[in-house]
Length: 363
Image 1 (cartoon, rainbow, N blue to C red):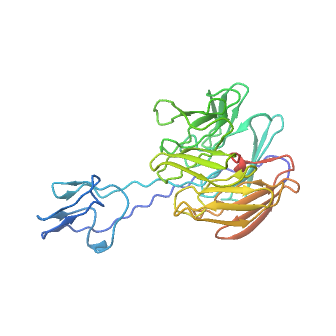
Image 2: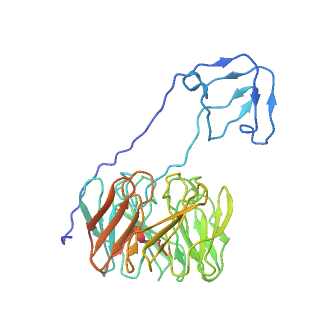
C-alpha cells in the first residue's frame, strides 16, 4: 500500500428490474383452493373463478410459490410480492461486492478501502484507536457507511457515503457490545447494543419505531446477529462458548437452538449457500477449518482455509450472493479469499497492526 490519500468519485448505479408479462384473464369452470393459499388452513372448492393479474397464460401450468395471496370474492388480490433485498456486507461502493478494507488504529485513526468496482483505494481519517468500528448502511443508499462507536461516551459516529458529511448521536454505555444491523427491514442499519452485564439488547429502529429493549442470553454469551430466516430482518442471537450452544430468536421462524462448535472457535455466520438465510458457522483457529451448518436442512460441511494467527473476514467478495471464506494474515498483511465463483484471491493490503474491516463483528 502506498502512503497518501487517493479519492475517486464513483457514480452510484441503481439497477431497477421491471418484469412485465402480458396477462390474460382466465374465467369459468370450477376451482379448488387448498391450504397452501389460505392462511387459516383447510380448502374450498366448487363455483366459478376469475383470475387476473397474478397467474396468466405466459406462466400457465407453472407452480407459483412464495409471497402472500389473498382470495376475496373469487378474485386474487394483486399480483405483486415484495422480497427481502439481499446486500453484500462491507460494500462501500454499492456494486454488490464486499470490499477489501482495513482500519488502522492510529491517532487519529485511518480507514483504507479498496473499491472493488474500480480497483482504486481511498483513505481517510475518522475516529481514534480506542473506538469500535461499526460499518453499515445507516442511510439506506445501498453503500456501507464508515462508522464507529465510542465506548468512552457511548456515541455513534457515522460518515455518510453520499457526501462524506457525518452525524453523531448517543446510544449505549461503556461495556456494551455494538451490534448494528437492519432489524426492522427498512433498508437501513440500526444502531444496536448488547449489554453483557444484564444480557439486554437495545435496538434503535431507524424506521421510527420505539427503541426495542429485550433480554436474551446470559453472562458470557457472544452476540451473533444475522438474518437466519431470510425475512429481511436481522435476528437477535447468541453463541454460548460453554456448552457450545447457539440460541437464535428468529423474527419470523421462532427460536432456534443447537450445539455447534467449541470454546475458542470464532463465530462467522453468513449466507454461504446462497439461499437468502444466514448459516450458523465457525472458524477454528487451531486447524484453520471452517465449519458451516446449512440453513436449508441443518446438515454441515467443512473445509480448511487459513492458519492459526489469521483473522477471519468473510463476506461476498465476488458478488454471487454467497459468503466467501476469507482471512487476513497480519504477519504479512495478506488477504486470502476463497471466492465461491472465482477461485482463491491473494492480495497484499494493509499493515501488520491493521484491523480488517470485514472482520469487525467476528467474535
